[in-house]
Image 1 (cartoon, rainbow, N blue to C red):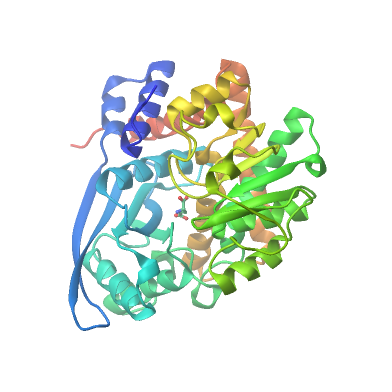
Image 2 (cartoon, helix red, strand yellow):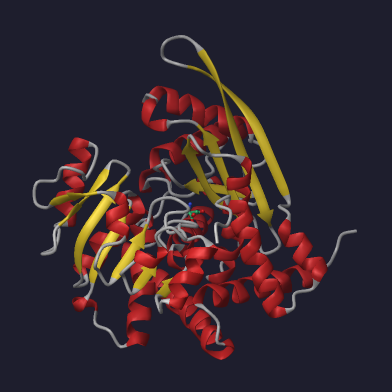
Length: 416
Ligand code: GLU
């Protein structure tokens, strides 16, 4: 009890558990415990008031055995090296679970984007990109959005890189708007993938989607789209929250209207067609599906015994600590772990990268049906391991992922 909430400690303990379970070669295990490369850059920016502030930016490649480094960039005051390494490691496993040809990376800048103007954010993004200009590239390292970054920021990355090399290279970054080489369906992809995985799980459990009540923590691009899509599929979304608080209506919330309300007021808190509730209350609400789609360490040993949802689908990265995981398991909860539940985002990033390299773009239906195929197959692979080895879904995801990355490492061998 009382385990660490440092994401890197958590990522390493998850790796150590799977290493033990599958008797992983210690040489490979040790290699996985350390990131391949970490870059730390200083980003001096002139603020709108004329003063200069120096921000710290990170980019970590955890493992590139299966392909170029892939993963988002986070703008958040709490960003630090340990967190970025953990998130990069989770990207390695995530890309392997869905079997797309990427290694794991993550980046971030410690800043408060909510307190910065558009012009300041643009300067920050361009200087961050420029400091890492030799790191990023369509064959080396492909960033994407993460917490508090968006398609506009991805466009600035694409532009800064393209100006620097002298021609347009859309595939240096994903999560761009379609007007600059982005793919249709990317905005909704993480939420959509999460709902595909939920459909697969419900089917295995013999449950109907239209009998489900859903609570979503985090009403950003992941949480909103997951809520909106699952509602369209027949479930009732009874509560959502964001960093300022939440709203609850047992009869169901209109997710689109709620999104509009948040766009205008800055939060879902105070939405007239429901009652106020706090983030903590949302997690412990009477519902059948809980989707934590905000930050790490939301479900811990402090609240795990009060979670009432039967199914937890991790839209966010690392929302559940290992202690909480154990408690939820003992209580018979079904867990859809982050490295499968939110893998729809990077899978559609893969589609965006392919389309950009070929300069040939697909219809939204094509993107979504390819996403469904990959998510369904990944779920079946994980379910099969969980049943065969009598392990949790999280352990099954890790077994699948770690075996795939190990195989690639062993085949490539050690250089020199
Ligand atoms: N940041 C997202 C994630 O954690 C997307 C990464 C990507 O598309 O490369 O999966």
